[in-house]
Length: 327
Image (cartoon, rainbow, N blue to C red):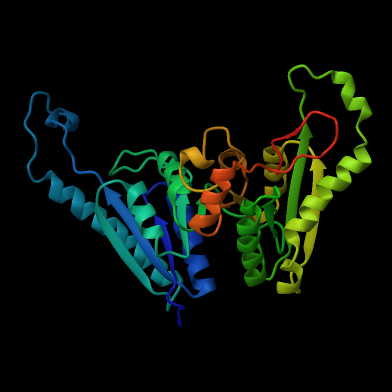
């Protein structure tokens, strides 16, 4: 297989979702003609032998080598399965002691994509994969795909679904989503949701004065502005728009039931810059019914500019409570 020297990185931990992530990453690497890097880390045991069922016993000195060999064997076998299923795919293996999350973040610096399982208990590490996927999504330097169940196969030509909110995060998410849709030969559904929330001191009766047609038109313009230029760049991709009043997580999760991939943006890297508990991006990862791609704004300058000015999704300019939790 003629690769383009780009790399798809996948983290494995021998759990069920890890196997799904490995399968998804292998298919993606073969389809996009990238090499595949399988990353598997392990923790060297530091516990007393009581953990092995010998109360009061001493530490087994050769256990470190046993764990290391088991990890190398597991990664090697995983790579062998991938090579068998995808002849010609270039597959490399990286193992070592340490944090799986930090290893994947490090690998993401030179990666086209990082793929992780949503959660699962790794028998060698005893580490919940959910903490790994959360950390990697927050800090990776490349898009991250989180796999907790396989993409639907019941819908032929299942679409790529992407959420937009009118910020630069939408540009990065849309670019990734269009590239995925074009390379897969499927359509794309662009989703923008909005809500009106009461604020302190605001009368509930104010909602009756809202020009809902005008509000809806302004929200539709957010999607139109976000899509500007993509139609010309990807003329063969069928584009559908879904602009609805509602909760972004609920709407994206609903549409993910018949999607091959759900794409969301997140604001910069690190917990303080957008990947926090309760954020739309993280909630979508938990609620989706298909693999989810989390995409950071392109370039550190965009992230820094976003944080410096405290940009947030545009609100509709009416004398009503502000738009909240828009996407």
